[in-house]
Image (cartoon, protein in one colour):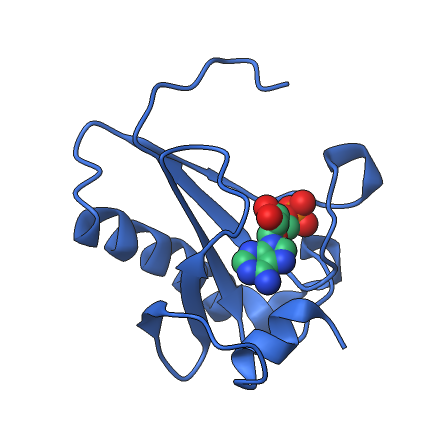
Length: 111
Ligand code: AMP
């Protein structure tokens, strides 16, 4: 079972910034920016490439929740949303999640 499943199930207590029937959002324990939040679906998809048409609404929901949390946290000058998919992208937790990063400027292209 992934660490995120344990968080969703309440086995690892964390403060949720957002919680609904389809996903939760909480602070990343190893922040890569002044604000670093993870938006995690309750459905245990391992990675983006495992999603299919039946997950279309869920994927949209994750984006809207990232935007809602960005507003909650007053990220008025911008933010970045990232999904790492697989080893080349340095995915380390195999339970789909969206990173919401903000509070500093970001360069492009990403590393
Ligand atoms: P990724 O590399 O895209 O799979 O991102 C996984 C993220 O999960 C990393 O940024 C970790 O810091 C974060 N993470 C791992 N365990 C926890 C935890 N228990 N609570 C909060 N964030 C976590």
